[in-house]
Length: 173
Image (cartoon, rainbow, N blue to C red; front, side):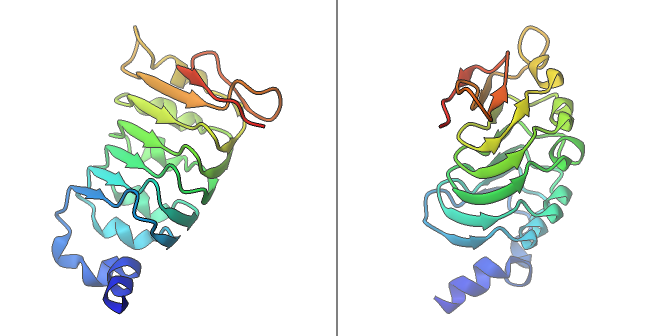
């Protein structure tokens, strides 16, 4: 257990020899704790799947240096909170998939996500996100763009996302 804690909570120190990893999948393992900025040591990562655990805290700003990232799935971590970082659309411009469903992320959807020209999947349902889906994101759907799936809480009455382009709307009480 102590070795696991050293690896998991201090990845920068212990895993430095593995920085060339391109795919890191820790999905559905019931891991707990804060998402740490130390994971940014994996600057060659293209796929980071942390969905289906019990992570908490906010998305670390240090992750903005992971510029090779294409897939980031953090969904089903119901204690994950904070706003969707605007650096997703400015520093992580290669993102193809963003999964934040079933988290406690809040605030509005950053307009910078509309700069992600390769984005195919954006999952924002069952969150505390509010406001309007940025038009730049809606324009990324065919025929103009390659965006295939956009989900949000756009089927409820109050405190949800106004979305004219979502491919699937979810109900939030």
